Image 1: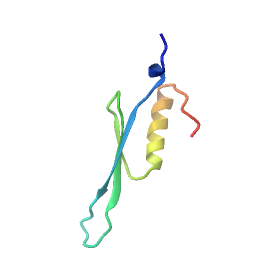
Image 2: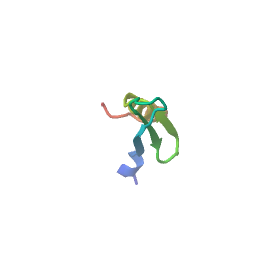
Image 3: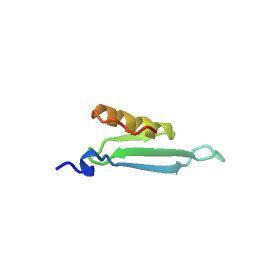
Image 4: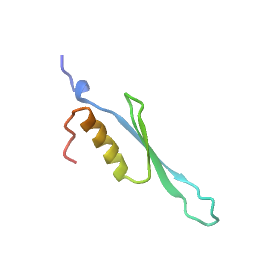
Amino acid sequence: MNTNEDNTQAFIVRFWLEPRELENARPIWRGVVEHVASGRRHHLKNLEEVKQFIMSYLLGKGLMPPNI
């Protein structure tokens, strides 16, 4: 039986503020995206990397990603 679960990939995206060592320097946003099933992770410096990670994973699995 083919269900929606067969065609579903789950990812967790986390962001946090990373303090700087320089006095009065603004903190930097950092993050990580993780593919739930495989546990594969990619550390992020910007939001575009989230899309790149997900798209490369889906294309690597032979799946047609959504048009986003």
